[in-house]
View 1 (spheres, rainbow, N blue to C red):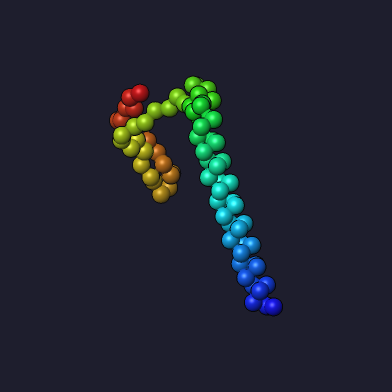
View 2: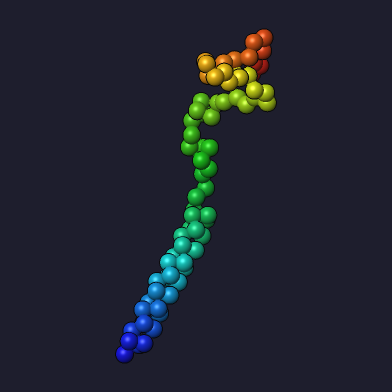
Length: 76
C-alpha cells in the first residue's frame, strides 16, 4: 500500500514537471513568432543617447574620492 502511494506521488511529480516543460516550450514558440517589435523601438531615442570612452578620465584619491585627471580633454 505504501509502495503504491510513493509510485503515485512520483508519477504525479513527473507529470507536473513534464506539463510545465511542454507549456514553457509552447510559450517560447508563441513569443518568438508573435513579437515583431524590438526593445529599441519602444525606448525613445533621446534615452539611448550616450557616449563611450576608451580612456579613464578620473583617478581615485583616498581623501577626495574620484577626481578628473588634469590636462585631459574629453572628446565626444
